[in-house]
Image (tube, rainbow, N blue to C red; front, side, top):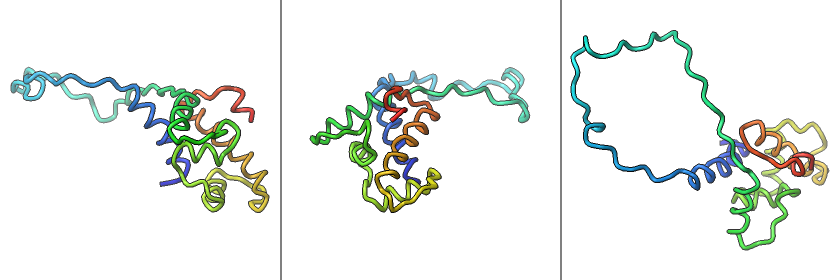
Length: 143
């Protein structure tokens, strides 16, 4: 799994678990529906029919990461630091991991300039989260 996928899963997966209400047990008739003769069943949609568009779910990135950061017991400045963001999400924040993430996201600067790379990474991760349905405050996106 890519590092960005791990970031996205940590944020979007946490939000889904926090906001998904418990499902009531399905009635027995829904589990074993009565058998209906073929002539009475509705016709299946043709294979060439376009799929209905799926709505992109919006996730409040700041709320989710604030909650995860609080659980670490550390004072993390994840809103400006890629290292602290990764720590809040429980993802490897080592220089090697950040270099891999920078390659993944297309950083074309000098990887040996870790300060410039980190600033770029944070901004790019926030942009990518926003592109994938994350609600990221403007103050964070602008970095």
